[in-house]
Image (tube, rainbow, N blue to C red):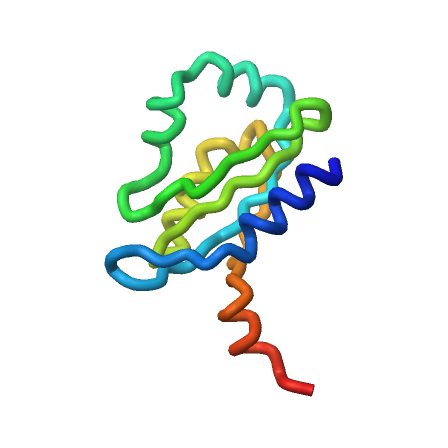
Length: 113
């Protein structure tokens, strides 16, 4: 669990930029039931990656298979694309979507002591 937390923390605060300039990153925390993982296991990586709407990029997806929990990091300029990715799984998974920022942006936002 400590490795999972360290990896998630490192990914959350990495600096993300694209050729078009900085994009927003959204953290999806999910918990899925056994039916979702049965569905997931029946798919190929190509099919899974094709579920991300055009205009969004999967930066990472990690699973804790013992609890059914995991995270996805999605990069996009349009937050509705992150929602569009998650919605088809809503019957089998609970999910939250939160915008996250890198260290540089956090330092720009936070008040100085």
